[in-house]
Image 1 (spheres, helix red, strand yellow):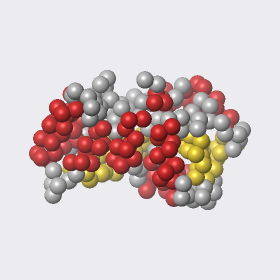
Image 2 (cartoon, one colour):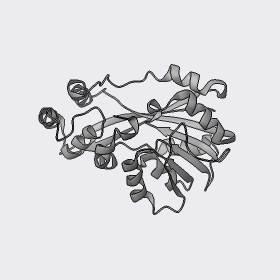
Image 3 (cartoon, one colour):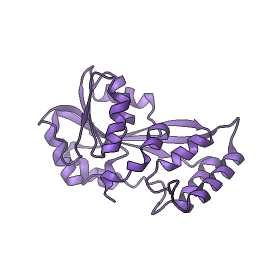
Length: 247
């Protein structure tokens, strides 16, 4: 399956249950990149618009670049109420945006789908002089007992799942090159009921869907873990949002 088609069957779960990003990170970006109302931003690999929505709420003009038709349609449905929302059928390597058209390029949870050299050329083409690139990840932490048990479900049932990766740094140093690179982290959490945890699992491309043989075993394990660790009907997933950028 092509990367641009991989999430097509998971769009509903993605919209409802995928983690968002902390307000402190948006405030940091505004200050660090000197963004103003209506600053043009390209959100590359925008998906269903999780980060796009937050950028729009800050008042920026956001070009949500997304090649997957189902995910792009979901973003359009959610975000068309914003006057500064622009939906773009494009990729990180071919955004279709004009030369020097944006002050900031964001890539949230999508850099691993890009061809780095081609994407870097494209980013430098569409960036204004002095513009910035921000590559963003939400890393699930596994410090708590629930976090470890939830991770074990993914390890047990995920197809080609290799665990929580924080090994992007060497690739990113090369990607940023002479632009220079800095990073900053922000902690946040989500409190979810059993249905929310189910949706969060199914939003991941490596987990079995409802029509696949191993689905029932996944749900059995999830229910056992939830019942063991829930408090007042909720379990807490803790995240570290990490942003890599050129200062």
